[in-house]
Image (cartoon, rainbow, N blue to C red; front, top):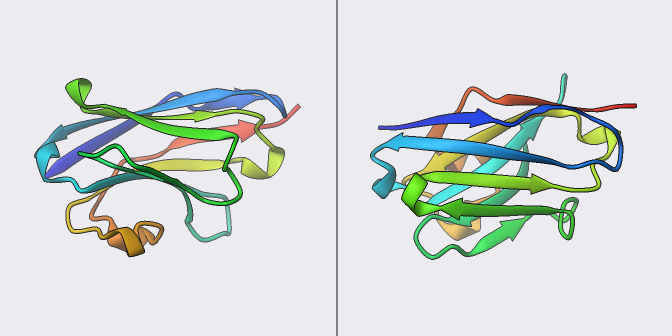
Length: 126
């Protein structure tokens, strides 16, 4: 079992920045990939970014490349999502996820992850 707790969401103006954190506990050593997804009201859950838990390789959705950075601190069992130049359409609940059986070709599919946090609200508005 892996438990995930997100934090760091809030209200930010367009063009602003936020850093989300996801603290993992439990059997974190079993995770292959950890990722960030987001879901806006009435929309499907959308892939944002993924990090390979052991190797640290990072992958991003095209829509956030160059603006978002996913990183990890293995000693703290925590992953981060630094979000810069935020846009109003990126208002959503952001979820952290861990996959113990995830393979790279499926890393952008939320169904490939078996543990989820409760989510943190990010609102981009003036």
